[in-house]
Image (cartoon, rainbow, N blue to C red; front, top):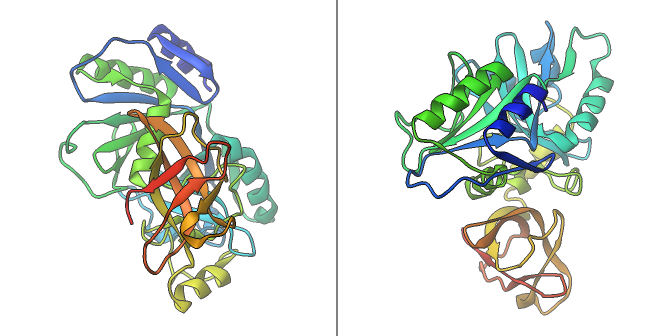
Length: 324
């Protein structure tokens, strides 16, 4: 994290619980407008004359669809079509900014570097130079734009339903923060932003879930993160075959449970309606918020939509699907 940005947040009464969690001890605030420091995600910059061509051969989304006014979710897969990472890809002048979980950034950069060869491409971890800020408006965002619509004035702004993600240099991030707080935005914990990502169905991966699922199991096809017409990329044959053979056998669902501690990524889920102890799916990731634990789960698809789910843990916590 940029030290100036960290010092600024500390001056704004931020409490750093760890490298990925920031909380604020501010009093209750009537406004539903919130501002979030996002520290669990990082920025990998892909630049150079061949950057677009290089990425086109490595990712599921179509690089030609990503412009100064449109960003996209996507995935990078291994040769077996399993998603190594999911990301939000944003165009910035002649470069591309890959927003992805910080814990996987170094390994993704190393893997991409193997494919650069003689291409004019540079890969840079820009997580210290570029800060990520979330904004929620409580109700419909003013001048609501389509998801992933992107604008750039002082900073890059990506629309996400009734909220937005801002990408800013550290000094500009401080100015933006102060302006928004002055306008009534209340600082909120970074964990709450992860909670909102879960509600929105954004399928972030962790070390435990990397290379576990093909992109369709993460609903990336429904989220516009897979192009089936762009041509070859690593893992494309498996992803395309799944598409043209029909529905994937597993899909991602929004769920909740009353577990005291949220399950870890890749925790096993049991379906008691099958009368077996075999795994029916896995937890993608989970976050506490608003008195319940919300999670994204990847499950075997049931033709009857009849599930009786629980975590395979000591408490056997019951899981309720919210979007069957």
